[in-house]
Image (cartoon, rainbow over the protein chains, first blue to last red):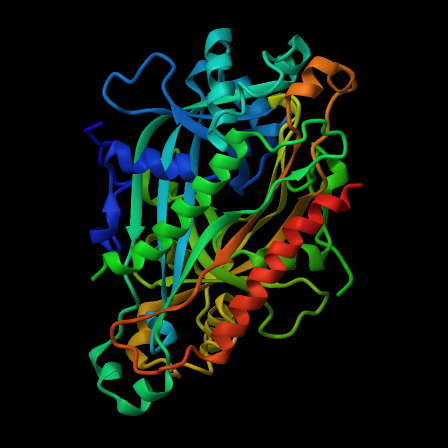
Amino acid sequence: MEGSYPLHARNTVRRHRERAKYDFETVHQIVNASPILHVSFLPAAQQDDIYPTILPMIGYMGSFEGPSDGALDVYLHGHSASRVMRIAGNHGPDGIPVCIAATLLDGIKLSLTPFNNSCNYRSAVLHGDASIVTDEAEKDYALRLITDGLVPGCWDNSRVPPTRAENLSTSVLKVHVVTASAKINVGGPSDDRKDLQNDEVTAKVWTGTLPVWNAVGAPVPSATNKVAQVPEYVAQWRQDHNSENESYARDAIDKGK
Amino acid sequence: MEGSYPLHARNTVRRHRERAKYDFETVHQIVNASPILHVSFLPAAQQDDIYPTILPMIGYMGSFEGPSDGALDVYLHGHSASRVMRIAGNHGPDGIPVCIAATLLDGIKLSLTPFNNSCNYRSAVLHGDASIVTDEAEKDYALRLITDGLVPGCWDNSRVPPTRAENLSTSVLKVHVVTASAKINVGGPSDDRKDLQNDEVTAKVWTGTLPVWNAVGAPVPSATNKVAQVPEYVAQWRQDHNSENESYARDAIDKGK
């Protein structure tokens, strides 16, 4: 999918511009690879508060009506009585301004000096307007999207569709993305020439990268589980997730060369 | 360290109150176990913008003067020219209102129905006032704290102290915490009685937990590294980090019983 999110003062990366990306594909991939999204909003109107707040939420990017230009919406779910849902519900279809951050840590890079230490990472920051999904077909679409976004195939391998009570107590927030940017860092550590030429320092200080990834361990059946075998959709996803994440973290180190 | 952060409408957990914690120890442990912190602030004053924004940052909790009551400050570092540092710098010692979120995903819990799926996690959300550290001794303290917070022992095993140029180009943000809360979920998946009593459903749908943790892979030396052996402080930390994180994720599943 070609195309990019528009540039604005809000999302233009100024530090390490060479790491910045604005294209749909990069932004969508980072958000959808992140099991947890951090969502910031302002509870001020309700609580006379000066502080923004952040909620960890689960969500996925998609487009109910099919993307016209390649941009996608972020769908987030939560309990209907939660604060963010109530605030968004009070604001109607225009929504409330939110920021969504998705961050994947891929490596810790140790340099000769703490100042040059850094990380390999994939990070996306999106700004947009969050409103409650009221269309039933869109809500069904979003709940399935979010469920399968965490573990693909989960929806079809569960008891669906949701009951009326389940549907009432879950709300879906749709974030229309206004601006977005991604930042990706790869490679090994870098050092200043002066440190690299200091034999005393280079003889003493090890430099290199520790690859980091999100590992999924062997499934543990619940106390009430009655299915003997871990289903293929879970076993296969786990294997793919671990090998892809580990490979990405290792390969990222070489990419900088 | 006994004691808790004060309750306020802003940080009082309303959904799943049984998962909420406000004590210093729990909040500090979650923040300090998180390699990445998400920091939200309002760039509005500078940019006439309605959206809050989020930055992924690296930081650690500590107290330069020694904790009087057990509360700690959050120290975050970044480039002196970065936007959050410039905005905080313009606001002086009172600081700017920020929110900091630290989230550790410990497991994915698959229930009979997507509605009851959930996660094991440790999450902390802190609100406070962020100002630039101007005292040189405090900045030294914070830079060491943050460096060793990521990989303990790194400071003493690197070329230190920082040069004058390094010190000038790095700023440290100190967040005086006003309110904080933590939320912890453990255990296996839960299901509604009606689904558990439906033999057709229980015969078909596997339920259980996938433990999740942050894995650190084998260190990869940099192209310029001249130290043959991975230092003990790195090797030992990696081993401890992996075994502690994996154990936590596995043990969390049983804790709910």
